[in-house]
Image 1 (cartoon, rainbow, N blue to C red):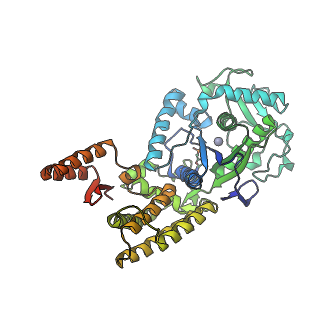
Image 2 (tube, helix red, strand yellow):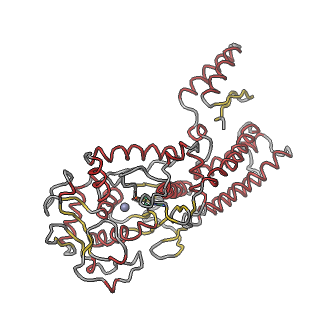
Length: 464
Ligand code: AMP
Ligand code: ZN
């Protein structure tokens, strides 16, 4: 497995710190609004990453934080006249619904910043002990960037112009405003009732310390992979590295991966530019989660991706081809899987090589669709017997562990209600109550499942 490490700016062979275990930290949403599909490009890239790692035999522990206290959430709550918790709750809930719609596999942990304030305070105390944090006149606590020898290594910053003692209070700022950054922000009127007691008085954590504290809590002081969108690289990740390594004296993260932006007419899709679609906007227009998923995963994560509605429209044809291939194989499959046909084996190998080379999804998709093309030809020619079709179907399922593009029901498999009806129908069949069999078949059809009687008993599949 190879990745492009933003730290070294080169492709590297991936080796976890411990055996096959992978600790993965993915910067999650700031829950001050509905996430837009630009944000979801980042989460889908991370989903492909986690699924590819699992596909390649790694045991992944993924942590995705929820930033529920920072400059933006506090401003949003104040403007809405709500408590911080009431304000962020809506967006947390909708975030999890959206993840489901996009078939993003759940992370192992979703820590919220407001549940980890004591860990953040403890980390800042360690930074005081190391002599790299200080409290300014206004009561806020800053990290002294000049004390950290490797500051700027990730973002390749020129730190020569750094003015000693200059400070920046905002969570987000440009490279031109390079300065000591806030670890703990003293309470002020704009914070309203948001605040926690600390050794430095009432206040709240800076955004960067949140991710350092939560990643240490769940993954330890050194772990394997940390990701985010390219806009997270500076200042967020640069500051995370500085404060974590200064506190622990250990290397923080082995591999940094950053995905490029989703753009609209050449500009980054963002809330501030107002050029965004939320997932809900697109679902209301009649697009499905898997169509949107396909668009967002189809480009390589380090390439910018321009979003257009016609491109999303075009995905329907692509997915229909894939569904048709699956249906044909399902129809042809019989008995236990036999030898994998040559075209499917070649597709599988190319697919694996694609994703294992820095998540080469475009190469993997090319392998998939070449396989579909050749498989269809073999099916047309009547060259695929039951066991061969079953084996080719298993290859398709294997690829789908990474892509997750099968029709809705097929991805999850039949639920308990479907299984119960099938059992009822099997009994009806054995008792030759054929009218009941047909009635249950129709009922299953309305639930999105198609049942067929084969020599091996009943088979169901999701109706595309
Ligand atoms: P935020 O909620 O602003 O903290 O962003 C959440 C995640 O979405 C971060 O990893 C960002 O880097 C990422 N992100 C924001 N805008 C875009 C975009 N247009 N394309 C891709 N990723 C983005
Ligand atoms: Zn973060």
